[in-house]
Image 1: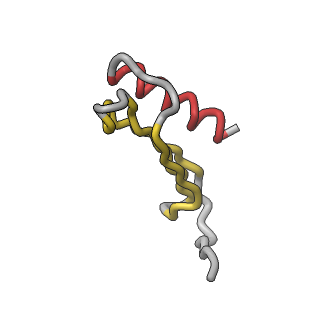
Image 2 (image 1 turned 90 degrees about the horizontal axis):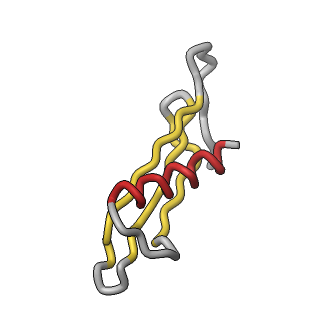
Length: 73
């Protein structure tokens, strides 16, 4: 098994993040995740339930962006 990358000068890394606000309404937790692609091929992804309670969708999205920016570094 392995990853195949085309020899293309347009290959670049893209990062995406998303959050699902109150995906666990009983505990007040949201789910966050991110995905990285290179040349259209997924090479890294992550998803988990947040360990802290968020108060809005915007707050959950900001935490997801923080995680993806930390991972990109």
